[in-house]
Image 1 (cartoon, rainbow, N blue to C red):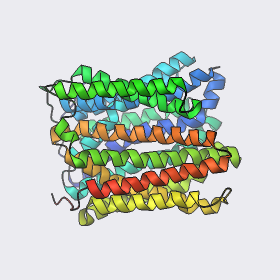
Image 2 (image 1 turned 120 degrees about the horizontal axis):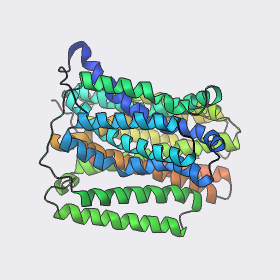
Image 3 (image 1 turned 45 degrees about the vertical axis):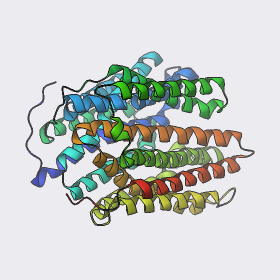
Image 4 (image 1 turned 30 degrees about the vertical axis):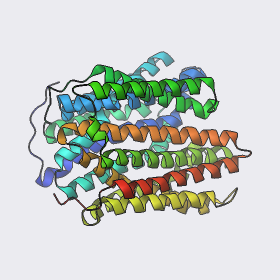
Length: 460
């Protein structure tokens, strides 16, 4: 794919790189949340087995999570704009293939290709924002709006998916990606400047294969843990193999002349601590969303669309919190925002856990709003911390590390939440224990943020 040189970012056009990057990220997240509503209908129309249905959803997640670091390394080597555009093109074309699927194997293959496209899009998105907005204040606002896309997509996904499935059919869940992908590609080529390349850096394929295996095996094991239980032999085997692959990656990184992530970078308190904070708040938030969704549908009898509306207070706060934190970061620094966000979110989930066995829905609105606001309020600062700790030539790898840990946090939160619901004496007890564990994760993140996030704002 050839890339035309774009004009410098600035003036009235300064919003264009942000719009381009956020459109790509929004498309990736929306595809996941909207599909969850459509999967039962897809299974019926394609006569898919239970295993086939699981692969339609989990295959995407495995490839996405597994190849994030590879996508980040490719971006640093070949240019983040180029790899980002490749990812948008792959994701858009594979979405069209999903919409045209005539049987389950074809749809699963197209979903795997979508996951690969997403793994190329997400690491480059943060790197491109850092490149396009070098000033601290503008960069903080851009990171905040980028982070809010996940919440907005999570809110819009079930609503949009339910509307499309009930009116135009499930294939439109994939077809809506086509105009978004084309617009994202055009905006990026026109308004985002070329990224520097580092062609002398080796990709170190043994390390890449090891990390793909580790993340994919861990994600698969966590997904199965929610269904089979944590003591199931397949789950234990998956986790053991993931640990072995992680050890192989660490050994290879120490020996490689050009490592994917230099050990000095991983030893950075801001880098490793910021990534750990991202893991913990994704654990808390997505564990809450998953268990709350089951509560609303199975215990309260809400429809898929009704569940999306019931969860709306949690995700509606994300845009407001992201914009506010982006504006405050320059004056306060990132540490107060991350710590206060985590404390507020932890208080929200603790409030849900203390609300009793069967609280009325209005009593749950404030806890959900606190969790959504606090998570998004902290995301801006933790993103800036991780990206600021990496030199420019490793921006793609830093973005990939941050998003990989967040994906692991999400998968762990969902798996543990499902396991707690299944193993508890009654559903209400399992739900409250799950919320209490999420609150503990948020409080741990607050403590880590106090230790690892820089105190003073960057004045550049």
